[in-house]
Structure formats: C-alpha cells, structure tokens
Length: 107
Image 1 (cartoon, rainbow, N blue to C red):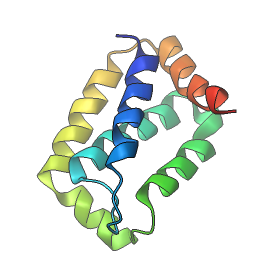
Image 2: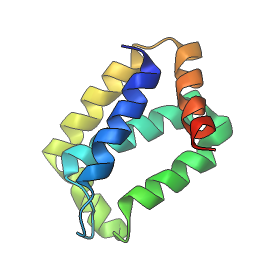
Image 3: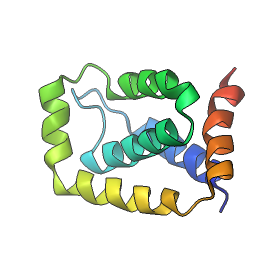
C-alpha cells in the first residue's frame, strides 16, 4: 500500500470517530493520528506548522493534562508504536511526497 494511501486512509478513519468528549477520540485513535503527524513533521519539516495545527484541531478543547492522561494509556502507546513502525518502513521520498500531498490536496 502506498504511504499516501496509508496517511489519508488513517486520517479518514479517525475523523468520523470524533466525539464531543474533551479528548475527542479514543486513546488508540489518538495514538495513530499523532504517530502519523509526528512522522510527517519529521519527514517534511517544511510543513511542520501545518501538522501541529491539524493536531490542535483534532484534539479539540482537550487540556494538556487530559491529553497527557490519554497518552499514558497502553492503547495509545501500542497504536502509536505500531503506526510508527509501519510508516518507518516507507522510503523517505515517498514519505515526503505523501505528507506534503495531504495539504496540497486540501487547497
């Protein structure tokens, strides 16, 4: 599966799961999304501010303490690690293209 598809599909899966809770998604989902956005920040630092902004939008009105509590959960840690390992297998050129194309397609 192409990395672009992995990134887009992962984000597409997460968005419908947003709920009115302070942390608007399950810890597992938060782990996946943060892993993808952290990966893209590293792979494509030029758009780091865009990834940070997207992370802020997706976490909603959750406080830093609430996010820290969610990040302590084993579900978060497992999904973050699994997603990171999968993304790390991708060639750098494809990773940069996939991460940057995400914002280009949104324009």
